[in-house]
Image (tube, rainbow, N blue to C red; front, side):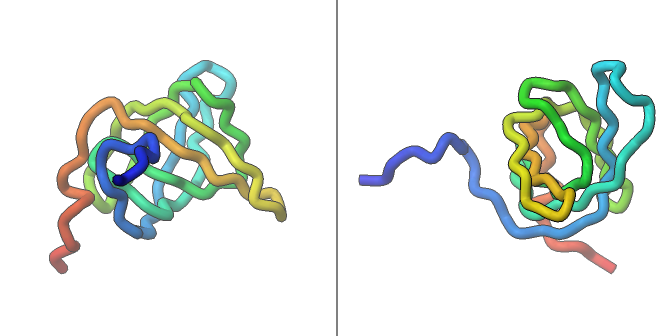
Length: 102
């Protein structure tokens, strides 16, 4: 029997540079981050910015033409000033599951 992991959809490994904007008014600057894995409803991003769980953010993945609100689920320190941030997106992103066409 499979044990639940807290995720409803499978994530795929995908590295893409993204911007992360905190929507709580604490900062107006977009910080650079990159995705480690993604699903239609979430992403794990690596950044040098601390993100408190529950905070609202906007994820901007310009290569995929994605600019969506999300909520921080977790923020884990990785060392060397980097953090892994789990995001739950407010809208499904089906195009992340498809390979790039160049």
